[in-house]
Length: 503
Image (tube, rainbow, N blue to C red; front, side):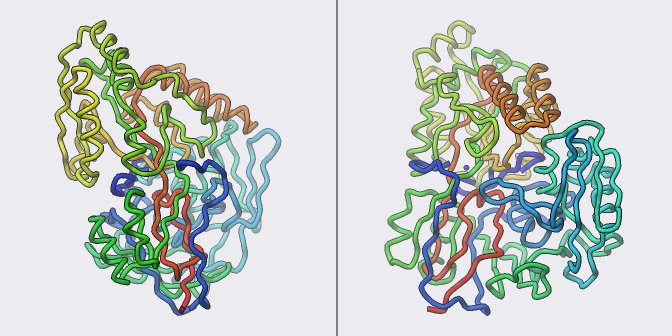
């Protein structure tokens, strides 16, 4: 969640954050096919876990906002598909100059905001310029390399100081959201976007309601209403689904498949994701400043145990998941080997090590239980400190006051955090930072990916963190529902094509 990485809080998956066992292809797994006629007046209820603290997409961190507001309420010039392809949105087309320094976007005509005001190229210029020049707005730094933003008729032209291979991707997220210039909406509690849904109601502590935008510039949504029901407890969510109160359930683990499917009204759907169960090491001082200690912890952990506990997902031994550019299988960097871990600890003079794990309390006890057991086997005593999320944000994320910490990082293409020594990971390697800068400056996609892979290898070899698992998107979809996304649902949940049958 936390720029750029987003954290989702969904059960074992959480957002924290997430390719699946026996499925590594790029196509999206299919949800059940509804047999009845789609009902355009239908209401779809979707269970989510982590409710946002407010709705200000400009300034408030958190996957809970990106998950529901981007694509559905707010849009940019370009968007991303669940498979991570970049596609047109408020721009009908775009071109990039051969030197990578000029991006020209053609803004669609006839687009209106939810309050009826027209979208103009000047709104685009104002939105991107304001984002770039307002440090308080999330992702403002993503436009730092843009020197000028100007309108030329229906075109908006961005000029860069140097090539930036991440610019288009950044524009599919918060950095590219287009707002209405001069808008007076209270973004904390309301919204005014251009998407296929309109924010209708927010019952804090309970639900958020979207209704169809009948004036939408594209194909209108297939349902009249979407209700996001925030139900933190998995069993309560499943009970609600089986009682017919919920149509889709996200944020639980695949081991509940039999219970979910027992009535025949739901099917469990697994999809790939970029959710990364990340065990962070505070490397600023103490035992964790020693690479041997960090490597020992990595090799003491049985990563397969997490995948087994989840019932889905796959192991991950580096900072880049399989869906992202630069992915390589780095399993040989930190294979499970308790004996090697004990030898490393002895070499480092840390044979009776005591450490504290700080973990948000919405995660189940399975994660710390596995860690406590594995580390105990090599002589490390792990104390678990379970805290509420605001405390985690303050102590760990902001003040970096922790030893070990776990959260699920859901954001795609978030390698930049390993090139930022100020990020809460506390990792500082100039060679990694240089490789990342080179990848940004590359004008060839394959070259950029190769540079990221080289940097990721170094991050893993430095034992900068441990990646306990790459989770799967786990979704229980009602048999009356079609068009429900199943890839990366903890990060983004584009519901433009969801439909509900009347039979």
